[in-house]
Image (tube, rainbow, N blue to C red):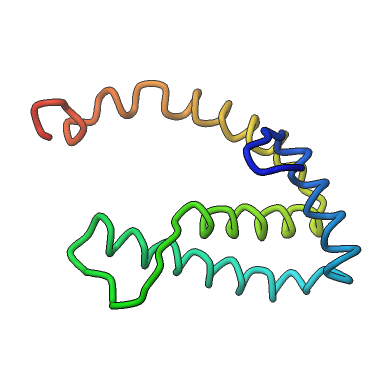
Length: 117
């Protein structure tokens, strides 16, 4: 795999598994991975708050949203792998659920009307 190369979600899960079981030696426990995901989510939140919110970066901070989002994808893939979740299948099922449940929900939400922006 090279930077810029597109891969599928299934390929991502496979690459994460291969790396963890060779270079990384073994998977961390699911609970540890959940804690790591929470930590990575906080790092994304920090960048978002400073980039799009009212806070400013501290001197010397080097924000990299893409890298932090990729860290989240990595840990999500690890959790999925170790719990037997196929993320491609899960995503497609989730999309189908949203298409049924939310078919008109957002269209009828007055908070989202274009004149309220």
